[in-house]
Length: 422
Image (cartoon, rainbow, N blue to C red; front, side):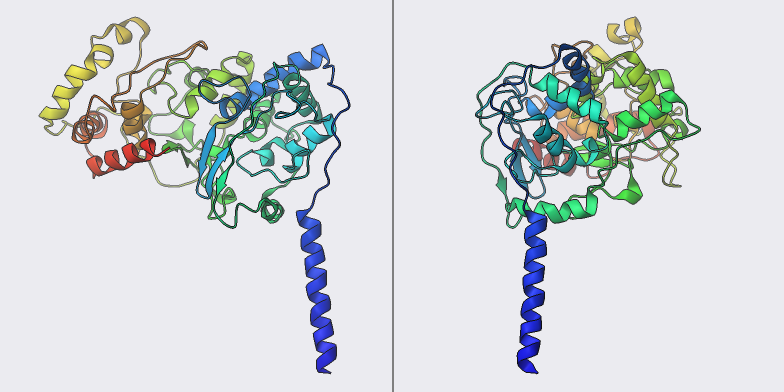
């Protein structure tokens, strides 16, 4: 009887190992014999799809060649480096067939069979149409090939064992292309497709669980990216300082939105990509996002209204007058000529968290060669932590004196350290 039990246990173990091996193995797809000749019409369409997906934001490092990869992505499980997706045959995707590219986009598996880490948002790209994915492939095979191999990833154990991603995929990869919702307008459905598919907005704007999967119950409810707070995209039309369609379209297209401000941090390059698309795409995204109801009953601070008398902050007021008023003061040309909002109403000052305001002061908003663009110098080297804390406290008082931020200097020190350690 004992021997039979041992054999039964061994059989169960062998079956389990076989199932695991099946889950963790994917075949390689052969290299193309010769470079693909891309279809011109597909290339033109694919250029727009690639902008929708913000591919260059991750696959082009600062100072690097277009789509040649090498950008470090810091995750809770280690640091990844984005790969080369130019048509170089040795280090890029020049030898990839259409079948291999589609599998990567839908299944998160590279041409040679290894699993891609979910920092590549294939869980969202899998919801795109076949036509869009193929068009993106044709566009990427048409860009200049660059020989550039990404640095080795530095992932902690056991996440450095890529095959474990297969179990993550069982939990989070749906691979269900989006279909139109009956009863909604064509524009709304287009916006939903861009937000939930190529745009992969929830990758940043949804909180993650302990294994890096999006919390479905808090979809688009806000997240944390590179030290910046990605705000909730739900309830924007019902917020204390509500967004209009015109304001959100302007923001999405890298302009400064009246009563809200302009994009900064990780959102800036995304908005610059959207600005290259037809304005109808931004309008569709705005229509969809503004239709989303708030996911919490908690009312945000009523900071859009005229604030109560601000607490005395002579140091912050002096810093604002010396470092900021030339651009942001009531009589500054920037405000009188193009109607830019006062800092007392921008989202960074009215948010529950001081994170984005402090990050903007520390890092500024870099100049871009893409248009439209806005710029702000960084003050990390000009102001110390106590100065930045005093300035942030002053701006918060102007926006929402009834709900001041606390522990500002500690927050500044933490964020400065995080930025320096990248």
